[in-house]
Image (cartoon, rainbow, N blue to C red; front, top):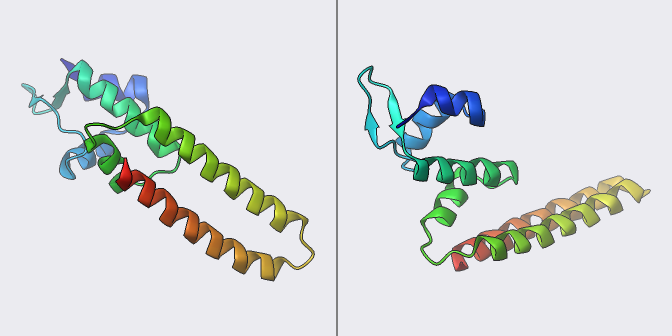
Length: 127
C-alpha cells in the first residue's frame, strides 16, 4: 500500500489535492488505513502520474476525467493533437508580440484561443 505521505514526497501532490481528486471521482484510494489516511496501489500511482502530466499540459480536471475514463484512449494521439494546438497558440502569441496594433491582435487572439479550446474539447470527447 502506498500512503499520502509517500505521494507528497515523491510526486509533489498535496494531500488536499488527493482528497479533492477522491471527492470528484478522479482518483479514489483503495482504502483508508488504520490512521484514517488514504492508501493507494501501483495502478493508482500510474493514474496519478497521468493526472499530474495532463494538468501540467493545461488540461482541466474535467477534461482529465474524460480522458482517463475513455477505455480506448490513445494517449499518444491525444498528446500529438495537443501539441498541434499548442503550436497554434504559440504562433498566435508570436504574432501579437510582433504586432504594432496589439489591441486588434488581442481580440483576434481571444477568439482564436476560444476556438482552439472548443477544438480540443471536441477532440477529447471524440477519443
